[in-house]
Each structure stands twice: as structure tokens, then as C-alpha cells.
Length: 146
Image (tube, rainbow, N blue to C red; front, side, top):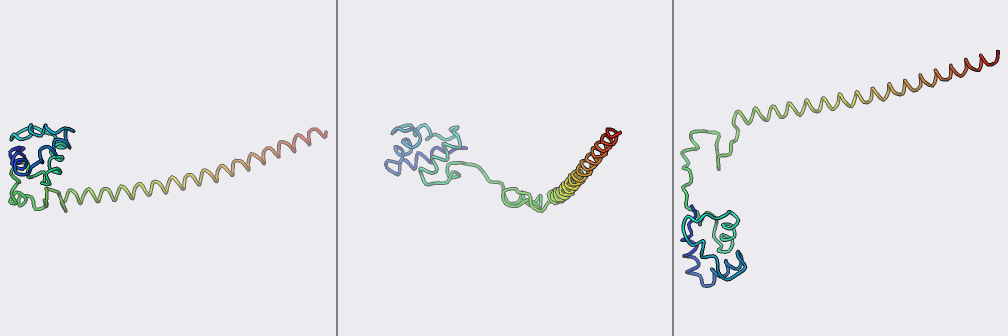
């Protein structure tokens, strides 16, 4: 929950801070007062501007309970902010990805060799066409000589 009372306390203790925040957020000297109440629903963008303007962390203006460290003991693969590290599922996924990358590489090699084979067959076909055309030309010349 947003703790606007903390913002009100800061602006009360530091002269000119409320006007400064209002100018940064609303381009006028007033307006920040709407965020002095606890539980106000505000966007993360506005909360971030308030935090930067006051020099406090975003968490300073929030009231919530972080999960205790004992929750991570339920799953021994969870560390930090619940990132899963070294889990069997993650390892299986990495192995599948590596396998699929190898399959893709082999398929690309097969495609490349097929392209080379097609190119060589095209050369053979064109030489055969030239030979046939030469034979036809010779036969026509021989036939016209008679």
C-alpha cells in the first residue's frame, strides 16, 4: 500500500520540496498534496518521480511485508527474488535447446549439400542440352547435304 503520509512528512520537514515536486510532476507549484494520503492509487511512473524528487527509494513509500526467508526453504532451487536456478526443469529445457540447435545445424548442412547437388546437376543438364543441340545441328547439316 502507498504511504502518502511519508511524503507529507518529508515535504513538511524540507521547505520547498512540495513545490519542487509539484513543478516536476505537474508543471505548477501545487498539486503534490493529492498524494499525501495513505492508500492513494497512483501509477508507478508517478511513484518513481516522487522517489527521485525526494531522494528516497520507491520502497520507502510502500508498506508491504516481504516474504520471509523460510519460504525459499520449501523449494531448494529458489534463490533471491524467486528466480529458479539449477532446477531439473531448467536443466531439461537447456538440454532440449542444445539438442534442437544441433538438429537445426544438421538440417542447414543437409540443405547446403542439397543445394550443391542441385547446382552440379544443373551443370550436367546444361552440358547434355548442349550435346543434344550439337547432335541435332550435325544431323540437320548431314540431312541438308543429301
